[in-house]
Amino acid sequence: MTDFITRLCDSVGAAHVLRGADMAGYLAEPRGKFTGRALAVVRPATVGEVASVLKLCSETRTQVVPQGGNTGLVGGQVSADAGAVILSLQRLNRLRELDPTSNSLVVEAGMTLAQAQQAAEAADRLFPLSLASEGSCTIGGNLATNAGGTGVIAYGMMRDLVLGLEVVLADGRILNGLSKLKKDNTGYDLKHLFIGSEGTLGIITAASLKLFARPQHVSLAFIGLASPAHALNLLKRSQAQAGERITAFELIPRIGIDFVARHAGKRDPLSRPHEWYVLIELSAPYSVLEEILAAALAAEQIEDAALAQSAQQALDFWALRDLMSEMQGREGGSIKNDVSVPVARVADFIAEACARVMAVMPGARMVPFGHVGDGNIHFNISQPLDMDKGEFLARWDEITGIVNGVVLEMQGSISAEHGIGQMKRELLAKVKDPVALEVMRALKATLDPLNILNPGKVI
Image 1 (tube, rainbow, N blue to C red):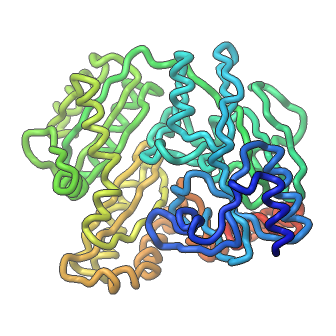
Image 2: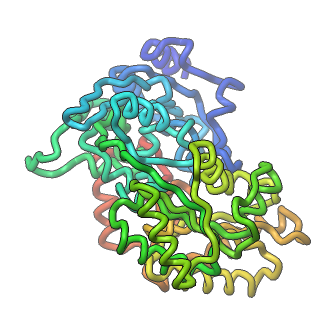
């Protein structure tokens, strides 16, 4: 072991091989559901250093667990083996190239999402991926989990925002697939193997990302309405009138607003409480949004609305959405589900899943919210006020099983944007097409025959 640590230090510098108490911040994920162990945390700063570490780990059959900003919610970035190496990519964070003419941005995996957004903005371009954790999550992590966020309705998932990748394979070879080309029909498109693979097939070290023209107009409204069914009607109307100019359409329950108001001091911008809310953003003048809302009000699809009149008010509206998960944590235990169903089934899903959970846990506080425009609902449940937190969390598998049962009945997915990690690995084996699982395992065996890359995750 001493020789192995010495060789790690030779690869990245002794100051960037952490051991003992120095590893603490890398061993637990944000919700505290998974806490891990490791031999060392290694912090390379170049793709060459990553390759050197992987070559060494391949020679010694040492497990490697890649980690970006450590914001993942399914335990994919946590090491379970005391002999494993956690490969932190946070120092691999350079902007390699910005090409406004080609609308491309080449960044390293450790760059935060917010930094990538800022780099694009400096060139009067837009990188449209947007997440509540964008200040700390990294591009590599976004790629490894195929992140989604609020802009999927207009721009797609992370997979849709990538032109090319640089990847270090399990044996230390570097796959140079960086490209700025939108057309490259030269065989298999290998980048899609690694996007969403959660570091089980290779370590993404850099990416060429798609940029877009910055919208000339952005309009935002916070809307009160009666039910998710009314939200779907509003979505249909908005799409008919604004089309692809809808850049966000977020559903929020009243209880979520109450949590944010109570713990973050934010206020409901509408004059009275409503059962449900929608936050809608258009890349269009306010006149377009006003026309949609006026027609929806006349059709009794909405009850009230407030339009953001300033940049600060727009930030305040978004805070009501973005702070919801964090503030829910201050209400005690929460059981969280990241699922998707066909958009047309969103209202039915919420109603049925709420009813089934309440039948087995009276008093459970239901907090379903999310990206209605792409069918992704974060079906969260806060503990009943009269229930012990430990007792509540002990029923995690039972409750998520009920929710996932409804998801599968409606031809949905058990993971919409958070990935599989450790949390959903066993469930994936039960719900995934058997032939698809065989292909996934064959890919794993081919690219990582020694099973050193993030073992115990995904498959």
